[in-house]
Image 1 (cartoon, rainbow, N blue to C red):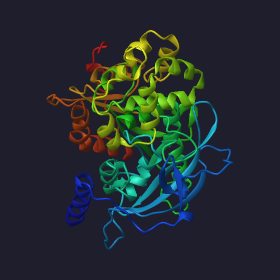
Image 2 (image 1 turned 90 degrees about the vertical axis):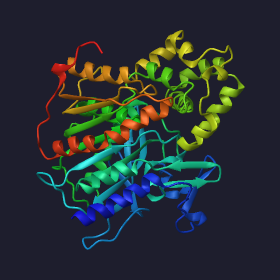
Image 3 (image 1 turned 180 degrees about the horizontal axis):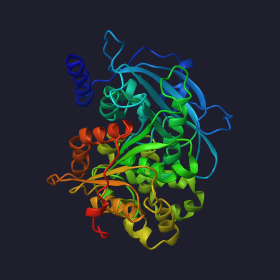
Image 4 (image 1 turned 45 degrees about the vertical axis):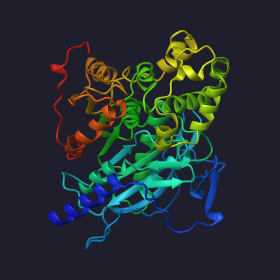
Length: 441
């Protein structure tokens, strides 16, 4: 067992440290691919015209080759992967196809009870379909013409698989699937995609998880917002998906505050992804956007809609939204003086509902990209509603980079986060620390 741990740890470290190498894989034919906004991706990601009625129903599957896989006596490490497309429902109540991946682990489950299932909600990947996390499992680093994507969630996925838990990863609405744009940080779309991923995995032929398997949610950053929203909406949207525990890392719970943190940072391009997604979901906002965005702003939104995180860091790092507007005001200032825009962001607020099951909220005290204060406020909101909350302040020194302030807790807290979640999946009770938190953040 120690040898297996060392081998898998080496594979995981390789995934984290990969540089500019691109994983090309076998040469694909035109029949195997589809062009989505200028980028070629597998035709699997092109949804059919008609979708099934029930949420979580599998639409199609195919084997997914893992780029980082090692042989062992028991089978390939960390396991065997299947690409998924399943049916969900978007924030407007319309049917939508969502893609993702299920990984059946080779390692035996080391906790109590039968093998559990963890839904991994990825952090920010971008808005181009080539950025999908399921593609990142096959190609951890991809250089595709002028685009660059990095499957950094592979590290947490492999750690969970090492524990013996099965993992299903959602690509979210519109990321991967070619019929629409990704609705970035739309809490309802993300929550539905997460919960329906659990349903899809449990119905997959050959999967060891069943309707009786414990289910946990794992997410950081955008993923933390998705797991938080899923925990809030589970009781009404997916009462059949009982949640044993949800890890909520650095959640963007209050987008009004997050907009201020992102503007002018290395990840300023995320403002464009948010705007693109909200304009798609609510076309009534388009006239407001047209009135306030100048030519540079409109060009940036079109450009960013095809980009992954790596592209956005290089092309729009440190951009100021005031350069995108007709009057030179920042996006935050325009939102504050435009009731319709503020109302749209208020609809995305996470913390107004009590989550199902125990939750662990972790946020870096120096995080000024997805600001620490608003993430902690989520924990306070939930505590006030009587939720079972474990709050963890990840204390790290602040540095000059907002991106590093946000990213560092993802790595330093990851081991504790995985252990907390696997304890819940083993049936161990959580210990809430709401009693130690002042009601005011």
